[in-house]
Length: 225
Image (tube, rainbow, N blue to C red; front, side, top):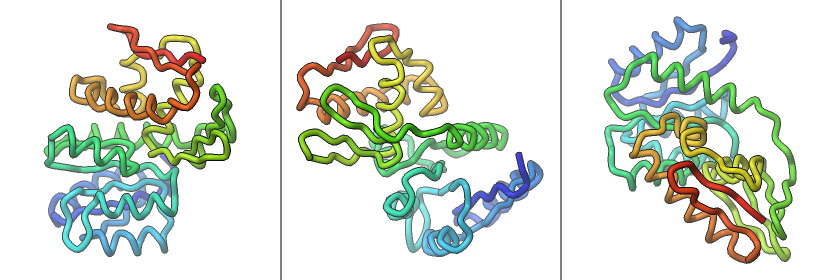
């Protein structure tokens, strides 16, 4: 990885933060270590990093609040949450706020590095401006769905999931592929989270009755229209 790639790391545990920082620097990343969410937000504004690694539980401003604020300014920067929380609702909340991935503590440095590289690679993929989906106009970059002059805003995760469904229109999108692509792992925990997002997309596409997201049991999902 090119040495100019900047990663903002927000972690309030000094020892863990230093370990992560040093490990990433051995891989030629430039790491901006911040001890709380407020410092992290200011550093984000001044340093313009390419990726964020945010601890969820931090003083002054937690990782979820920080991610929500940053997503109002930048819809595309990759965000990884570090969390001791393991409840499905907590993880879904993180994805709803614009997170791209999460790691449950304790985690291995190798796993974190693999996920960082995957997100950086994915973030370089070209974005198609407007994608017609039935009577809707979908914009991945802006994360919007428009129909009859009415605009719905999508979360980062919803937009990316819909993008891959649309790319595979009328074909089965395998669960394992999308889980590894967007969630980083195809375990049962992530699969439950994905089902929640599929339900949300169905609701947001309900104004066009010709559009369906079909569950192909045992294989995945198919977007048809």
